[in-house]
Amino acid sequence: MYAQMVETGVSAVRAQAEMTPEERAFQARIDADIKIEPKDPMPDAYRRTLVRQISQHAHSEIVGMLPEGNWVTRAPTLKRKAILMAKIQDEGGHGLYLYSAAETLGVSRDQLIAELHAGRAKYSSIFNYPTLSWADIGAIGWLVDGAAIMNQIPLCRCSYGPYARAMVRICKEESFHQRQGYDIMLAMAQGTAAQKAMAQDALDRWWWPSLMMFGPSDAESVHSAQSAAWKIKILSNDELRQRFVDQTVPQAEYLGLAVPDPELRWSPERGHYDFGAIDWTEFYAVIKGDGPCNRDRMAVRVQAWEDGAWVREAAMAHAERRAARQAA
Ligand code: BYC
Image (tube, rainbow, N blue to C red; front, side, top):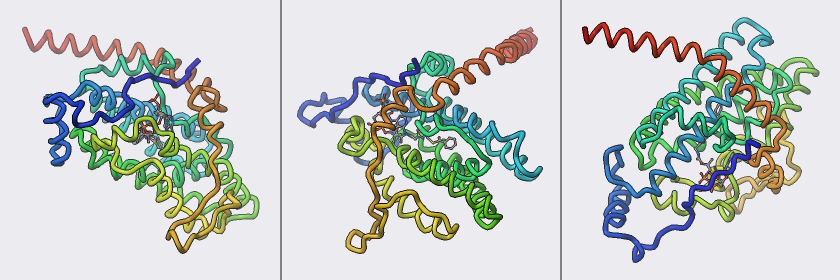
């Protein structure tokens, strides 16, 4: 159930010699940094790759609203509650821009949502972990949005125009989200001993799943080579993960919190932090549907979709009546 395993049939990079003249012309446009727009000719595999990635990304935004929604009614102050609600609304907006970007490739939002609800589409592994304390809301903003920005800034330069343009606004908003998360962590780290312990506990639980957000190691990443050739991926999974670690460790130090990795140390030779091995067994279990919250997340999404049916029907009826009035 909700296996989050999708076979897109795009894995190996095609050598120039194997390409058709149309594919060579397409690759030449990519190599010349000319953006691909919806009506441009494109290889079917490029289209499928984008539909897969953009829809997974859209689903992540929408499912990502759930762990945070868990704390709206329990935010510690009115101000924190208003900020959290605004952030969650932003995620909904990001989902909409991304579904719209995917629709330019010839799929409908209803189709994509049906795939998600049937357990045939993936969304980010990170949203299958529970939010047990208020500090988790801080950790999500700081680490999860921090990782999301690291991955998404290069996507603003990706080859597909509608995706690249959608990412510009999303990244601006994610940057506010990251700051609100860090602000919560700072308040807790400077608070009572119990509050600091909650912040540390949240960091302990969210650190490794945040590193997993960047996907499998480059050696194991089936789509990376082709996506890099098509400039859908500008930086590799491992490069982005390293950048995230390098950026985040000093932030943890400033908070006075310990990153839960005994092997973490600065390497002057590499000019980067070395870090311990990721538990890939856990990652693959989560993306196959066996994370702590996979079933719950999908059940809540499907219920929300069914509960909202009357709103969609009313909106359609209103649009039809208005169109009929205008036609008359
Ligand atoms: N979770 O060959 P690979 C956010 C899958 S943040 C689940 O490296 P690719 C937000 C991958 O789909 C998160 N599945 O794939 C933040 C593939 O399976 P399929 C959303 C994962 O696509 C705060 C297989 O593993 N961001 O939105 O080249 C609040 C092999 O991987 C994960 C995006 O989606 C994972 N973590 O690279 C609210 C960014 N990692 O499809 C919301 C756009 C890998 O063959 N996406 N898999 O069945 C990307 O940049 C890329 O798709 C990835 C993976 C780097 C994630």
